[in-house]
Amino acid sequence: MRKASKILSKKELKLVDNWADTDWYRNTKWTDEISEHFEYKLKKSRGSHSKSEKLRIQAQYLFKSSDYGHIGEMLALRLINEYPNETSAVNSIRETLGDYYSRLGQSEKAEGQYKFILDYNKTGNLYGTSQIVEIKLAKLILDSNQKDRFVNALEILENYYKESNGRFYLKNQAYLFFKTKALLLSHLKYRNDAISNAKLALEIFEDKDPQFPNHKNVGKIFDSEFDLNQLRNLIEN
Image (cartoon, rainbow, N blue to C red):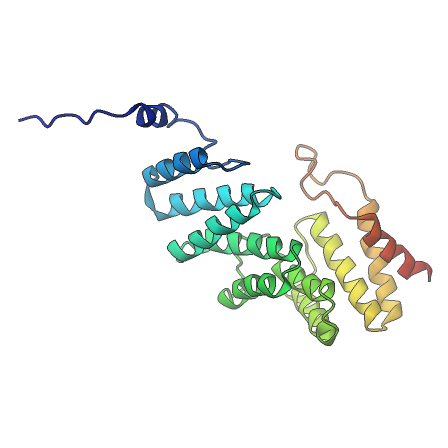
């Protein structure tokens, strides 16, 4: 005997009608209705890889908002707890969490995320990350003014440069490296080396040609006038 079909509610029908949309895990705001829709769709996703990627993408969209960053954090921690074996997604979201905590001035939490990635991926294959977690960690030590660790931060940068053979994927990554190194060297009183690295950073910044003509914002450098003036003053004084 044929089984009777379930009669869907109006709300369920609406969700089914929206099944083909691809924006359900790219929300830039969060409400109870959006949350319910997201959970419905997530449940329908197939396999842990797909689910973890949807959680990652949604969390990263919400991290960009000052109003919904805490929801992004909640989804990020959920991803880490529920899909620990999805290495690429977990690495990516841990880096984003580190960036988020860094922006909030929560340096201990930020360092915990960055160091977890580096400690877990001893081979150096930081799948899912920007490949500059070491630079971010060194910059975090600098920005949080942990003076007793400045030498350690400089060593992190030098090891990164050695292991990457001095190659950077993007101009903004190279700029961040040389800027951070210049400021650390300045604090450590290595004036000549600090000036050399500051000049390299500014030279990269002043090159306005897009790295990829078809994707003009990829590798583009955005920095505050305060940080730029720090480099300029380092050279001039």
